[in-house]
Image 1 (cartoon, rainbow, N blue to C red):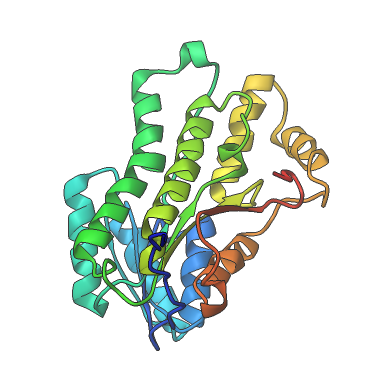
Image 2 (cartoon, rainbow, N blue to C red):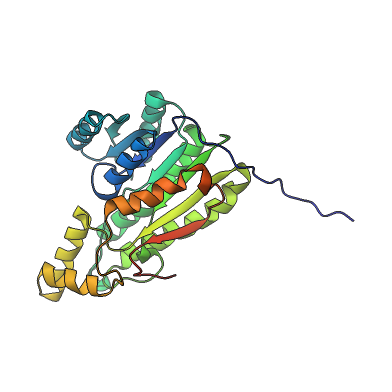
Length: 272
């Protein structure tokens, strides 16, 4: 009696100049990812909410000799997401790499969290990941391609609870779950799906987070930073470039067998 077998996905080689779409690509981790991928030979299409910021970022990166373009887009909007993907394909061709990076912080005492804050954190951090992924698979050229990478920027907060960060932790836990499920779904096609989970990273968002905790704890942002750094075995925040390097690795041919994983870049903050 024979047992049915599932076809095995064979390792595929990235195109010579793969097209990458990066959301939230004008600052912090997103900007570092755009620059890293472009330096690796990708043609990168980016987005952010503010047209002027997108224009300035694209101009600066092109001045560095990088092949980059982008438009302003609100990734919470189904219509804006469709326009974004269509613009990327029109500019560079079918998308091979999707980096869902756009996100926001958000929290406070749960009893005081407004409906607006809760839904905006979920829309920005979670629903956008679904909307972009579905659109790139359906209309961006990723489905049926011989090579594909989906990389979601989650957080170590997607693996453990964060004090006064219930909306943020909930959204990032969901991103990790979505990543693992989709990774199994797309594995037979040879498309890998992974989450990168930064810990404390020195970005503009990190500055806002420290300010929020300083207000909640009636202390200084410097004191908050020292408390956070004391929890990190390496004793320091990670850099956006260190996170981007993990994203870059996951786009390589040598990462073809890495899928459905949530990989920490956190200085030892989380060993799970």
